[in-house]
Length: 211
Image 1 (cartoon, one colour):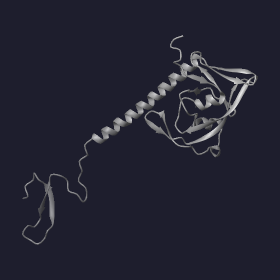
Image 2 (tube, helix red, strand yellow):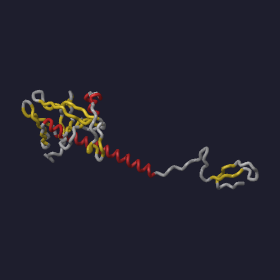
Image 3 (cartoon, one colour):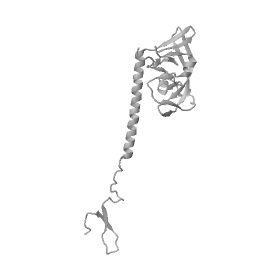
Image 4 (tube, helix red, strand yellow):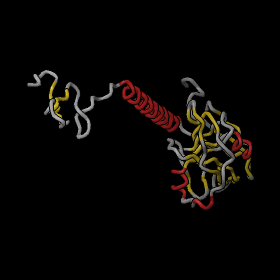
C-alpha cells in the first residue's frame, strides 16, 4: 500500500431517504456541512431550514464562509440487517463542492464512530454488533482528484480575475474626443469680427493661420 492515510475516507450513507455516494468523513472539521445543491437533490423544502449561528473559516481558504442556514437531517449507516440512524445538524453552504456533504467530529461523536484511514473503513456500534462501512481506494482516489482539480480551477479563476482587475487599474485613461460642448485638444478661438462688437468666434487648429 502506497502512502497509507493519504486518500480521503468517502462513504455512502443514507441521508433522509437517499443514498449519497460522496460524503466525506472529515475528523479535522468541527462542523457537519451540506450544500444547497445536495438539498435540492434530496427534495428538501426551504421551509425546513433554520437560521445559522454565524460564519466560520477554513472552508474557503483565507476567507470567512457564511452558511445560508442549518438543518437537522436523519443519517443512516449500515445494512438492512444491522443499521444505525442518528439526527445530525448540518451547516448549509451556498457554493458548489465535489462532495455531497461533509461529516465532521460532531458526526463521529453522535455515531461513536472510529475511522481507519489506512484501510478506508469506518466502524461504529450497532444494534446487532459492529457496523463496518467500507470505501474503495479507486473511489477515494477519483474523489480526491476531482476535488483537487475543482480547487485549482477556482484558484485559477480567482487569479485571472485579480490580474484583469490590476490591468484595468493600470491602463491609461482614454483621450477625450471633441463633443458638442467641449472643444478638441489643439484648437484655438478666432473672432470673426475683431473690430466690431460681434463676439462670434470660430474654432480652428492651432497650426492654421488666422487669416
